[in-house]
Amino acid sequence: MIRRALVLAAGRGERLRPLTDTTPKPLIRVGGKRLVDWHLDRLAAAGIVDVVVNTAHLAAQFEPALGDGHARGLRIRYSHEGDEPLETGGGMLYALAHFEGEPFLVVNADVWTDVDVAALPAPRALAHLVLVDNPAHHPRGDFVLRDDRRIVEGDADDVRLTYSGIATYHPALFARWREDLAAQGHPWDGREPPRFALVHLLRAAIARGEVDGVHHRGAWTDVGTPQRLAELETRLRARHAG
Image (cartoon, rainbow, N blue to C red; front, side):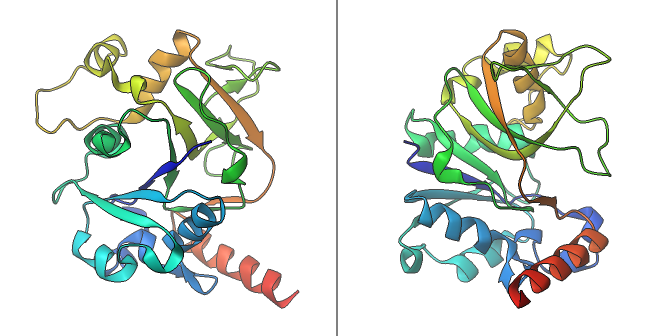
């Protein structure tokens, strides 16, 4: 059972400006809650206690808003990356010490979903990804899910799915991050702490056959624009009224 989680909340939310000029995207409200509250409540319901929230943009707002998690039965800690986000891969690497070598769940704070996080297994190798049907704004998808649950890059005519931003990871995914970045054509530029996208490590691990996944067919929204935020608000209000 996964016991620890990382909520990725450091991004600037450029496409949601001007809302995100004064409020971090995860703290924007939808359906009567802040986006991040939906995730924290699901994590608590799943029995996950140790939660790390990574922060950068408007970071000072998070701890007063979320506290230490005690009211939810959580223990929330914060991984502050500085004023500039370290991107998904760099942010996960920076927070890695909090997980003490254990597999952990990762949730992007800027999605809304009904994924049952309690049902997600620890990765058989390095990563277990939740994939979803391709949204209109990302029609080509990301990866191919085989019948045996292996995730592959696939061929040009394969049907791809989109990575949901939810997965379980083993810390060993980062054991050779410098080599994997270089192998994917994105060598580390030497900056400390490192700043890089997770997808480069995932593609390297996929090439080695170390990533599997599941297709989630339920609700999922990438709350990346004012229009998608408004559409989600309408759906959640209708669901509540029903």
